[in-house]
Image 1 (cartoon, rainbow, N blue to C red):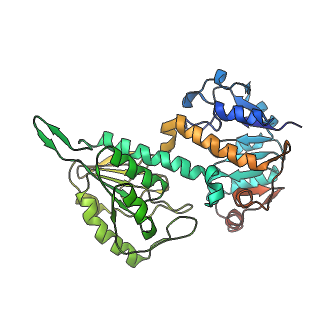
Image 2 (image 1 turned 135 degrees about the vertical axis):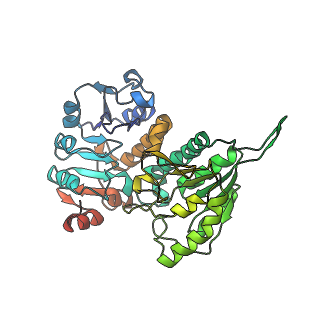
Image 3 (image 1 turned 90 degrees about the vertical axis):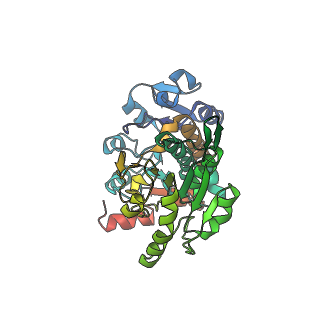
Amino acid sequence: MTIRVCVPKEVRAGEQRVALVPDVVKRLTAMGVSVSIESGAGESAGYGDNDYVGADIVSDQSTLYRSADVLMTVNPLTGAQIEQLKSGSILIGYLNPYSDTDRFKRLQEKNISAFSMEMIPRISRAQAMDALSSQASIAGYKAVLIASTLLGKFFPMLTTAAGTVRPSKVLIIGAGVAGLQAIATARRLGAIVEGYDVRAAVKDQVESLGAKFVDIDIKAEGTGGYARELTAEEKAQQQAILANHVAAADVVITTAAIPGRPSPKIITREMVERMKGGSVIVDLAAEGGGNCELTVPDQTIVHNRVKIHGPLNVPSTVSGHASELYAKNLLNLITLMIKDGNINIDLEDQILRDSLITHAGEVVSAAVKSRMEGGAK
């Protein structure tokens, strides 16, 4: 039996990405997989229905859902969408495993094997499937461009007939994938850049990109490539040292996020009030409440002449490349499951096991199961 992979049009407001791009569809069909795309699904990412050569274009969404052996999405499905899934089918996409456990009860009841792209393990073999990293890289790049638009100054040093313009100073807080890409982008634009992270191990990476590492003598390496939460004493030490660097910066870009928890508050009101008028903060952690205590998600506010921008879903604003990278992440994941033309979910494979939330009528993710048993929503 031919495997049918289906891709719906995203329903999240403002979402411009699509789960599969035409090039990846060609690669799937070459593997013997049948692909169906909802009409208009790729429009916002720059792909028309005619670009999806080899795919069936389906206008009726309910038909698409009910025919899918594998449904690939960008954003979590709504309850109504889950109800349309075929029993025993596979769902792959962002599932927001840290909240709304009712969604997983529905998936369990529908006997759906649901893979969460957020749960792909941070191991070498899984790098080609790591959608969090591919999308974070885009967010880091775009954050610098957003900052350059909001800032009333040049980034690079310029020598003009009217005199020399000094380069802007940029501070990047958080040196994960997004932070490192932000550092690289700000350097390309000619700014003087500093990078800070509580994980001392990233110092060499920051410096290799031409930035100065802000060392506050706190080592907070955690698991899975993330930082652990700081103690109250460590937070006080962090803020005391960072305050001077924030005050000297023209642009501060914050990227510190801990999956499943509110974003750590790193920049206080007092730190903002020490910044120069016209300075800019771009808070990439706004989805989790923000790294700056004044951040308002999805808004730009001005406090004491400092602009504080809290963008949401930044990768979607670079929809073409964001979709291309995400589609390749999905392709590499499903390739692990296809054996001799059939789907085989090998629970001995760490990548499949760790990213699987519901399977065979059960919640198999220990973390999600614990939340459900604890009554978390």
